[in-house]
Image 1 (cartoon, rainbow, N blue to C red):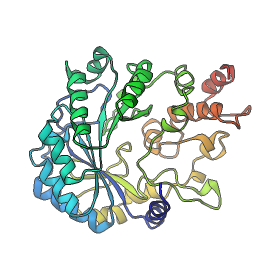
Image 2 (cartoon, one colour):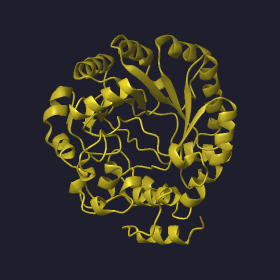
Image 3 (cartoon, rainbow, N blue to C red):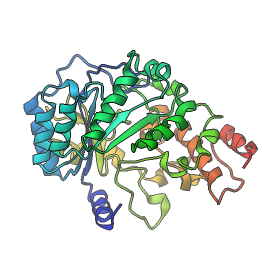
Image 4 (cartoon, rainbow, N blue to C red):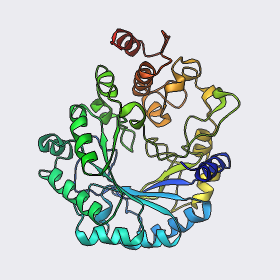
Length: 364
């Protein structure tokens, strides 16, 4: 990240400017992924004009990075009209899609409009495993065809693979395949609850004995924890740092107009159909409550020996225990493995005793 962008990120975070927003345009999808957070509701989704109004409000609030996701964004007939409006407002627009509907014309249009990146979910190069996640036969072939069309049109494409029990063993084949063809490839072990708080997808997380095996690959030492959120500025006391950018410089807007601190944190803070975005961002009791939490307020995390290696997700912690009660077991597990792979690993006391035991028994 360049010095100028870093300076903007720091200023946005300190001044509580929502510079990074994920905006889901629809919950409708042509896949039924077993781990997906989406919950399709009976409420009407935002109309084109309502979406335009949200974009205007986000621009006025200072948002720079805007990610359109879903559901499948290409199911909205007004998708390109929305992207065009967003680009006129000078947003840096990124798009998440499964690419099943991508054609040469669609790929060319995204490039013409100046979309900066398209993220595509690929779960495995094994059709049986990938299609077993999407529950859509033939989806792997069509997804890879769509990704190639976008790349050939000149779009920067990133293949995202959530690491789950069904997909973790195929990560290296996907990495090698993607890099050989010039794709950025990203892996992430973060499996979240559904947007209504249902924790069922958490059962799909990789098991305790898998992270040590996976993270030993040099690629993962830094790349397994990609983040689109603004970085946290340095604080005089590490215990005073904020847990993450959610509610400080980033948030999530649902297709129904609900505003959340983060897509992983199912705490509704208000609805844009009832209150302006900036009022929700600045005055919502729920948003302010999340914003008031610092690392020093987290009784387990503030004294943890592997805190320097932790990318604690407040959203996952909230679903599992509550905002302040305890950390996410998955975050503890990942932090311990990162500590093991670091040059500063020493015998330590951690709260996830089972993971600590696993790590100490694991060969270097």
